[in-house]
Amino acid sequence: MAESSSARGGALRLTVLGLLTGPARGFFPLGPSPAVRASVALQRQLVEGYGRPLAEGARAEVDDLIEELRAARVRFDPRVLSDGLWYVAYMAGPQPRWKLGRTQLAGQRYQLREGRTTNYAEIVGSALCLVVEADLRALDGASSCPKDFELAVTSASVRFGTLGALTVPIRGRGRARLLFGDERLRIFLSPKESESGWEQDGLVVCQLPGLALFGEEWRQTAALDQ
Image (tube, rainbow, N blue to C red):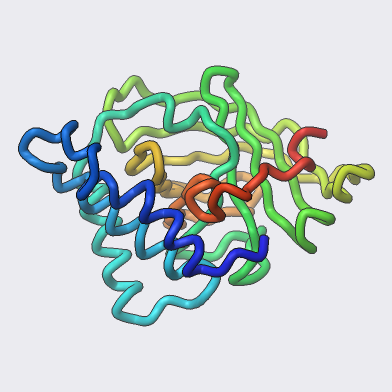
């Protein structure tokens, strides 16, 4: 994906900043809520800073916005976990074992209704990638965030584009806590180390949908459909 961060930022502004300045404002009779404003501000920071290190001040602002959204305890909407591949746009805390570099594409596809999730991490672009499939279930009946989910690995493979795959020995269960979710932003916390050891307690991940990061030219990788 060759789009620049400025192009991505422009694409995001057309969709996200409309919440504050465009016709969508009609949905907020008294103006957008503090959580909506914080979500928009965080999305802007993540898109504009995607693929490069954040300055110390920008990182502090991102962390403050994450804390604000965590404290908002927004209503949980199942649709937040039911749509395509979302990419990791920011991480804080202990680095996971699947993280290979700053510009690596990695993300998750949640399918809550079907009870499964797909974890995706590129090794050499989409031509060589790690794909981990897992069963998914909610661990509580909470109607608002934070909300906990368990992921139990069912298969893992290194995929060579659409040419084939090599099974790898990743097994065990992990836990994901959704701190915040709306139609353009998800924030997860790993509340405990996964049984596989691939993610540690305290990892915080912000995810954005591919369309928000890469614009109208984005297409989901074919490796996920093998």
